[in-house]
Amino acid sequence: MDYVRRCNKYQRFLEAGNAPPEQLHSITSPWPFYKWGVDILGPFPPALGQVKYLILVIDYFTKWIEAKVVATISAERIKHFYWKNIICHFGLPTEIVSNNGMKFASRSTRDFCTQWKIKQHFTSIEDPQTNRQAEAANRVILSGLHRRLEEAKGRWAEELPQVLWSYHTTSHSSTNETPFQLTFGTEAVIQVEIGESSPRTTLFCLTENEGEIRVNLDLLQEACEVAQLKEYTAKAQAARRQQ
Image (tube, rainbow, N blue to C red; front, side, top):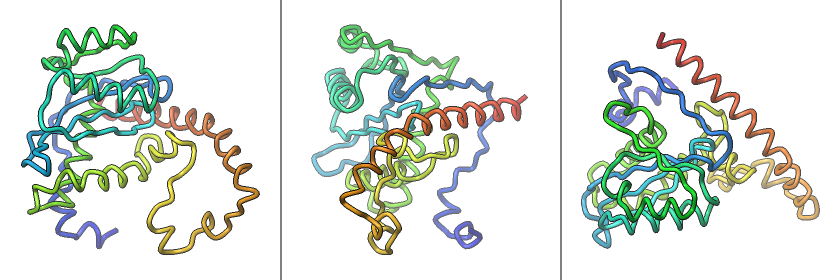
């Protein structure tokens, strides 16, 4: 760990954590995919296909991130993103949190959300912490891209999947679980398990695998409940530290 902390890249891309104190608003989600926070990043340097923006959403419960690179931002692209990346993958959400930018608050986007009984919650300058989940996701994406790209800025879109993969397979500080585990009920097979044998890959038995997967799925509800308690505890501790 000391070696990592002395690393040049670590020092340059480490978040300073010196933002001025603000009143803490603890916002939670009662179950997976109930509430999503959405934001737009960019413009970035134009990449292949002239894409330069990133639409990004994060689930408040599992911390799973969905992202799409686009050339331009419009209400139609936002609606298509909601449909394809949220609804078709994870079902209908109850609430989507965003800023009150024109593309999110347009009549067309409002009508789309009304059609699917999705509540829109808009943040404001006076209440910036309401969409902290999306802001945190933004920091993860930007930090990961900076670490991987440095000078080759035009390749940010190509590096995005690797940044997301790394994030999804890393335990989140507030839940102590990976977003992949809370979303799919099992841990992803990561690169290290291919290069170096792991119990899961070496002891795999096809005839017993289905039963073991069913056990994992049975335990998913318990894992979600434990993760929710851990997040409540983490936010309560953060609130006490601020007082």
